[in-house]
Amino acid sequence: MKTFWSRTWACLWLSAACALAQAATAKIVFTKSFPGSVPAWFSITIDQTGGAEYREDPKDDNPLAFHLSDSDAAQIFELAGKLDYFKRKLESPAKVARMGDKTLHYEKGSESGETTFNYTEDLDGRLITDWFERISETERHLIELERVVKYDKLGVNDAILQLEITMDKKRLVAPEQFLPMLNRVVKNESFMHQARQRAANLADQIRNSK
Image (cartoon, rainbow, N blue to C red; front, side):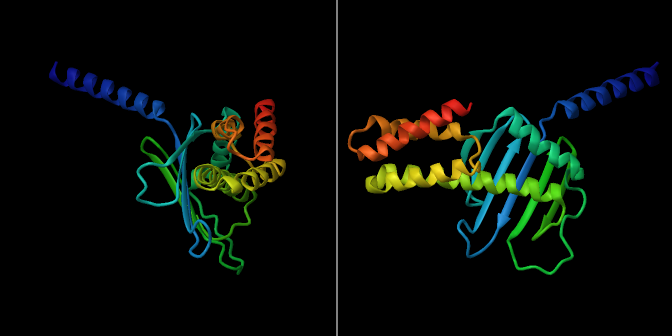
């Protein structure tokens, strides 16, 4: 009888553990270290629900938080799947200039994979890297826009212009995160009329793109 109950509890425990593993949210962390560039280091964390964080300092305990659309998150995780969730090497044997050490890390419950490379010839590896480079560009624009709005009103128009250019190139990710700052510019008459008009037009463009 004792053996029977021991086996029963063991089966129940194993079933519960499997259920928890299946319920665990998958997460991808992309880190790039490239001393001398701006930024010299950054890290982006994305979970399968689209929740994301951006850091430019490993010790940053207050990262920029934003949310990717379901389709964007799905594309990134689909690429991760094509790359065996980073369980294989992506580094190219070709001798190329240093482009920064990039690390892709995947985890879901007890499952994990990680690979580091300077340059890859793998198409899916290049596509997923471009996703994270675009996210970094986006967050850099947000950081700059917040800075000029607070400390450099004359620089607001140029910051929004650069944002427009990046959006026209289809390199902005989760552009909705800019709406609060753009609306702040539109409503504040202390900013130049040109900047306010440009902010209004870009905000409309972002809303319509949804």
